[in-house]
Amino acid sequence: MRLRMEGNGVGKVTATVTATVTVTATATAVPTGGPHLIAHVRTFLAIAASGFHRHAIYRQATVAAAVTNSMFGFLRTYVLLAVAGAVGVAAGYSGAQLATFVWVGQGLIGVVMFWGWADLAERIRSGDVVTDLLRPIHPVTHYLATDLGRAVHAAFSRFLIPVAVGAIVFELYVPRHVGTYPLFALSTLLAVMISFGGRYLVNASAYWLLDIRGVQLTWMVTAGVLSGLYFPLRFLPDWLAAALWVATPFPSILQTPLDVLVERQPPATSLALVALQAGWAAAMLLACRYVQRVAERRLVIQGG
Amino acid sequence: MANAYARLLRAQARGQASYRTSFAIDLLGNVAVLGADLLAVVVLFRVTPALGGFAVAEVLLMFGLAQAAFTTADLAVGNIEKLRVYVRTGLLDAVLVRPLGALPQLLVLDFAMRRIGRTFYALVFLAVALAFADIDWTPGRVAMVLFAPVAGAVLFGAIFVAGATVAFWWIESGELANSVTYGGRDFTAYPMNVYSGWFRRVFAYGLGFAFVAYYPALYLLGRADPLGLPADAGWASPLVAAAAVAVAAALWRTGVRHYRSTGS
View 1 (cartoon, rainbow over the protein chains, first blue to last red):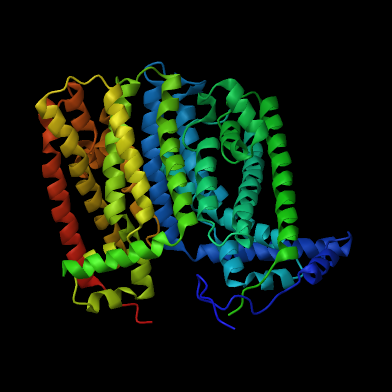
View 2: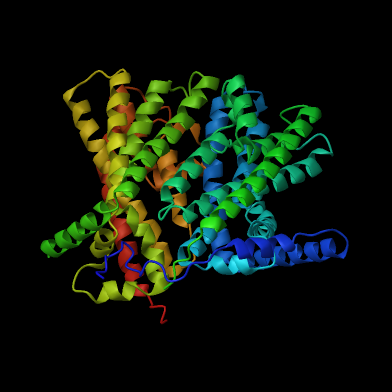
């Protein structure tokens, strides 16, 4: 038999795992209530804590990222304040609301984490993902727990630095209603889950594709533009902004928490937007589980 | 010696050309990236008729000049970003022992052909922006259109190199350099009178970003500088670029001398 040279130079298949076994293993671990549930919550929290600690190590990287976010914070605040001009209002946002939108948005970049997560894709490529499948906890739940731990760490580091810088240099908006604060926290939590779902799906495309850079790039650009990171979505025509909100998960990742915080709409509308976020979070996580199941059925581990 | 670089470059080109789908995806993706940046500028003008007193066609001219300069620099030296990977993994040792310059080697070793699409789109966009801007063409303005993107690219190139040298001192610098490279690209795309305070002083004049697009655009448009510099300030861009190169070269040499292998 003649050997054909493969692109990656590795012998193609040395082990095939029929993942049906794993799927059943995962299925049995689904909580049925009672003590199981408590055990499950404990596991989830323990994994989240490990995610937190893992990121607590990267102190230099955290500071570097916060500096970069702050640079963009200055840039975007000045540009948006220039848009508001002498009138001081743009698309219904006052100057202070615009500044808050920008700086809190720069802080949230690190919390929701739009891009820069390729753990799963790398583990799929290397074949290490097989250990994830052997765990008694569903891979989506496991990675979500890790990501929430990471987000909590980011909330106390990458979020606070740009917000503090913004508050020192610019006049920021202080919410009028006390209820805005917990609603913002809830909205941010849901935003992290939606963003995680998107990243997980992008990474999971590595089950099918050798090179996922195209998928990553598409997600990065789309998420950047349609989430309100590049400009507040309310700068767009109303019908378009509304369509994006309902039909895509992107506004729920950034625009919603920011609009909730600067009280751009009445409290009732804010509640409705957060409810919409909850819907998107559920949809994204279900999509992740579905894609994971389909992937496991056809999974071929490339060994070496 | 040039022969050695040419060979390295050709080997890179051949290798990357074999991944056709990836290359095509990158070409498409780059259109999307430029489109997104463009959209971010255009959308602002839905809300306001003028930004810092400049109309949409005028700001798009600045955007076009900034993109042309940035993407050219990114194509030529953008991969120097990977220096921190080389420093962290100790691969830089291998580069330093070869009888070729360290900087040119690093640039050639990772030359990313896929970035060529970005430069092409940016130049096409600049041509369109020039057509839409109301420019009273003179020989001086024609010369400026040719000079400004080159000087701007040299300035951005110097910024890329200077930013990457941080890795010699601070290995986990991560995306720190992005604040001056990508940040600089976005900064230069808007009129300088939009910014204020120390932020404008540092980025526009300290790092020289005002001379990439803003002053050349003012010269092309025949507009006075609201910040008070003479109308011919755009011609200073080659000098600013040369100064930036000198600083970047000094930083690079200090960095290489300071470099200590990871030892692993």
